[in-house]
Amino acid sequence: MKSFIKMTLISSAIVLALAGCDDKKTTEENKTPATTTTNATETAPAPAENKAEPAQAENKAEPTPAENKAEPTPAENKAEPAPAENKAEPAPAENKAEPAPAENKAEPAKTDDKAENTVSTSTEKADSLNNKIKITTEAQKESYALGSSFANYLKSNLEQNEVKADQEYLISGFNETMKGDSQLNQEEVNTILEAFGKRIQEESQARFEKQKTENTAAGEKFREAFAKEPGVIKTKSGLLYKVIQKGTGAHPTAKDTVIVHYVGTLTDGRKFDSSYDRNEPATFPLDGVIKGWTEGIQLIGVGGRIKLVVPPELAYEDKSFPSQGDNANITPASTLVFEVELLGIDKDNNEEAIPTARPVQAPN
Image (cartoon, rainbow, N blue to C red):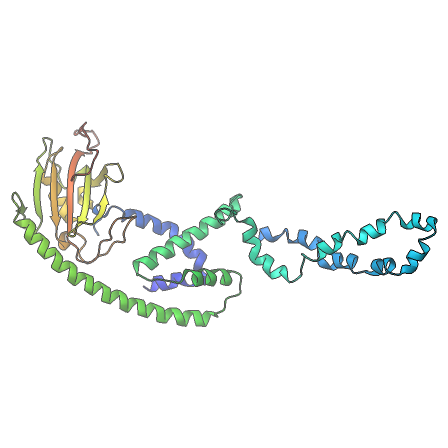
């Protein structure tokens, strides 16, 4: 939890963003639970706006002397003599003053917009249709990737700890601090996060105890009912299994690497993992997976299919694993149910080939 709190400190945001890339690998390893045992440069154009700075534009329009010259009707009196009209006729002077282009330039360009320009920089670059910022240069891609990595890392931690943060304030805290304009000093940030971390730890512990108690009871009830089904066998370790199809090929040993298709569910039927969904068989070393798998897969030959009901002590015990996509998450003391099809044994000399008839659908 301390690492979580440190992660959220804004001052270390970029470091954590980079760390997020490494954490992603850990998340990928957890993806198949059965395999484990345990823009400032863009604001430069502002000078272009400064060219039309109201100072100069207003000065051109300000010299209402031009208007005064046009106002004093004496000029009109002199204008009666045709010669004078000819001089004044080329009303370029009047056109300069009249076509209030100077005024148009001056009016929209308000000096108060400097603050707005800073905020609207991203708006100018935003896609008018989907309001997403446009990424064109390599530097922009790199910056965006850092932000995305940090967001994924933070999002994962928040979800794992079941923390609901106000996204608007979270992003404001990040942006304002990055600009050196945080509304909280570092001491205040540390104090707030220290109290926040303590509260999250207490909530997490209470949630852990509740989940463990509920999962233990549900698991015992499920295993007791499954043990009474025809063809179910219980081993000395407590593993429950039912051979659906023996298979005609060789049986793997604990030292072999197997090629399988499988579906993993909880006792309530919710799926937490499936190689069928990925449309690709999985390859596991049997001595590198949960104990229930190491023992159970050796009970069938290549081409065989088996259903395993694995108690917590042969699975992940009191560990938790976050959900992947639409799949369920694994909570402490969960009994896991697997249906596994052994497609082959992966040996260096290909002594056992993968059966030609590969399954294309998950078992019903």
